[in-house]
Length: 85
Image 1: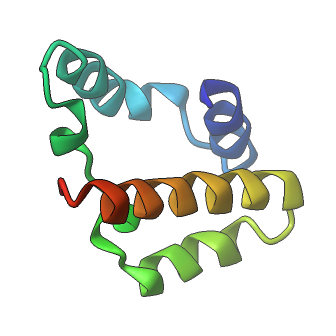
Image 2: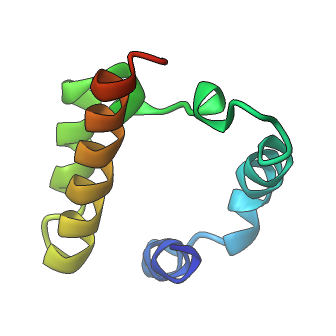
């Protein structure tokens, strides 16, 4: 996922260090027992408008678009199956 992020950032003339805060926060959340409770983002909120915007941004990269869709679907499915979030 970091390689995908780096590719997208580089393509848009943005530095990889923009992701440092979220990478550090994600790594620190791993220490908690209920890791799923710390999940954030449009998929966990089922914010379909934002997800559509993200997919539109990825439309010229079908492999990344597919990854985004699979991960989002998985997050939403887990949420509904476990009724945790």
